[in-house]
Length: 473
Image 1: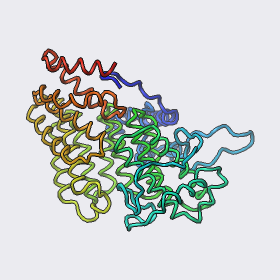
Image 2: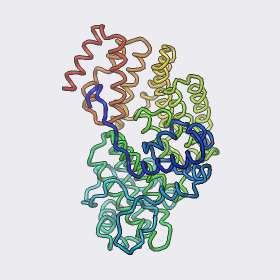
Image 3: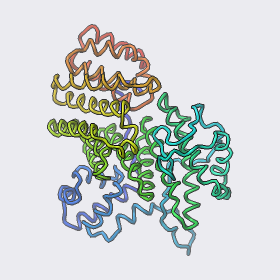
Image 4: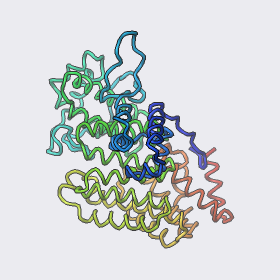
């Protein structure tokens, strides 16, 4: 993606447009403004506006509150739970609503014989993914060949899905191991093939869950696994700039996590949704999702730490200096007090990896705050936080290394040192311009804007801009 190129707006999902129209009707009938309704349900009025415009999927826990406040008699919840059904033959009733509303790109399952070349984990958890049935007790995984054989039934015709029932635990373990490999592959360099494989396997899990649900039992393990797959699928589509598909995956993941009462999945999915709306330039919605993370379970410090970090960045983008600093301070205090339960549930937020994540988030929030305030002291704090995060990066995380390099350069530009900025960005410029990850493209655009806007006449910056132009062409 070339620097300065804007993305076309995502098409509005018809189902959410209909929800928005119904919400507007009930709000007006109740005699409430968007501001008054937002205050009653605990959301910003700009988010209510986006809901009514069909531009946002309503958070799962908000719909029932809207129904109650507006006296809609369950109509809003019914619309969310039951997506528009295809036309049915005359005289036949419409299909009953289910957990499994239509999912994006429901193409043929395809071949799953070769999942990934990454090393196969022997036990779970792996890459932070716990067993969908047994949690973090340390389940053994079947070998790669056995999983490939089992997948023939999972991704084949519908009448073969039931054949996997006798090997349910083994298949759940194997599919979690496969997802861990795909996550590890995406750390290095996410590809279209990786995203397609994740979605292909996810559709197989959903088909399996549908078959179990039709048999009269809640497919608990399949739902938890589907939520994990949906999160990874959403992240990969988000990095491709496909916001509509990414939000759809995250929305499905939330529904499956809620059905399985998986609070951990709900918190991490809301985190990704917060990132997605930030990349779309919507800090008000980012704040809504960030606050929803903290509402999942106030007793889990790791969730509250995440909520504070995401709120800090949302407040920075909203020009609220005091709130940004307050939430950064609370995030660091909570991070320092994580207990054994937190370390068990969110191992990726503990130790060196946890410091990496916290300092990276803090660096992003402080850099954003420096951009809107012009405060060079804040920019220097952003440099310090980003540098601490960068120093802890493992070599395999190439995309994250590229992103943090650009953020560090941008922080130096905000701190008034354009020469340091172009010196840092220079060695990775070709890779950054050619990268397909949206987060990298956003960082590069910001750096380019800062350098061109303030120091465009400096020889070093002119040379930098020529290199960007040449790389883009």
